Image 1 (cartoon, rainbow, N blue to C red):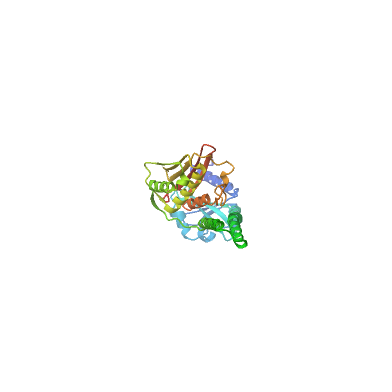
Image 2: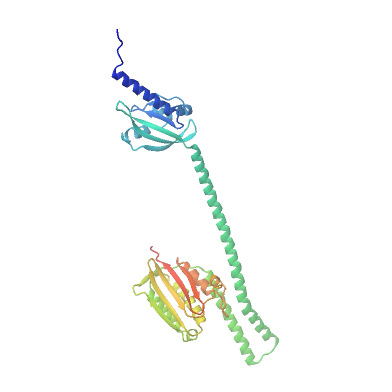
Amino acid sequence: MAKTGRSGHERQQTGIAGERDRLKAILDSMDDGIYIVGRDYRIRFMNRALRNDVGEGEGQYCHEFFGHDSSSCEECQHEMSSFGPQIRREWFSAKTQRHYDVVVSPIHEPGGSVSRLHILRDITERKSLERALQEYSRTLETKVAEQSERLLRQERLALLGEISAGLAHEIRTPLGAIMTGIKLLEKSCPSEEEQKALFGLLKNETNRLQRILSEFLRYAKRRSPQMAKIEVRALLEELRALLTTDRQLVGQVTVDLVVDPDLTVWPLDHDQTKESLLNICINALQALGGTGTLILEAKARGEYLDLFVQDNGPGIPADEIPHIFRPFYSDKPGGTGLGLAISRQLIESQGGRISVASIPRLNTTFKISMPHPEV
């Protein structure tokens, strides 16, 4: 009797079994841990790499075998649809003491059921490197902060030494004149005219000392700015009126105002801004020597107010510009060199910036940029 061939159903089942064996062989060859969980929350398959790491767990409940919270089962089975998107999380295994990146995706079985495919990638070394990098970053930040503090202390000490030397130099001259006058009064009986001259000298030098100390205290004593909306044109007009009252200083100099017509008010500390501009203007008028033009200009530039003080005097040599804001730096006879240092301090206390550009024998322009505090 002839043998009958296998039915189509049998051949189909054999083909499916072959595909499963082939798939299992592929999964077993992978370094990443892989397992499949059915709708009943039980592990249906584990590849060789995962079994080698955590042992045999097929048939057991996923959350019990891996030590997950049972809520993670609900997340995998119900919060993820049959077509994704995949869920990704990190997991630390108490058994292996290693970190894993876990990717969970839906997988459609031939019979129509939907299981969950879990792929575990060991990221322990990456986590270790991340921790080492974070620790290095913290250490580096600490070192940078310490270095910055050291540099700041060195700068402060250098500035203190510079200020002390400048103050000593400024005080030494009037003190010497005062001591000379006192000795002359002690050693002889000067005439009335000589006494008048000596007392005049003592008075002038004492006043000079008072002025030096007053300017130094203004520089050393920092005051928090009192910001208020100030009429910019009114401030510049007030400044021009104050300057022109000193005819000896102004001489024949023309003081002009140029104010942006759209500019009305701006948040400023009135007194600090006025004093800063006044110091710059006095320097400019001294440089002009009684002739020329001084221009006070104000204009809005987006979120900034720009104030300019420009003169057409002899200019500032390029090698001096980096030093003019330093305390006690001055090339004027009788000058303390604190005016521009005070101006910069007052402007920067309001969040502003001050700069200077000069073309010898043409013009010098000081620019003050004040940001709007509300921006």
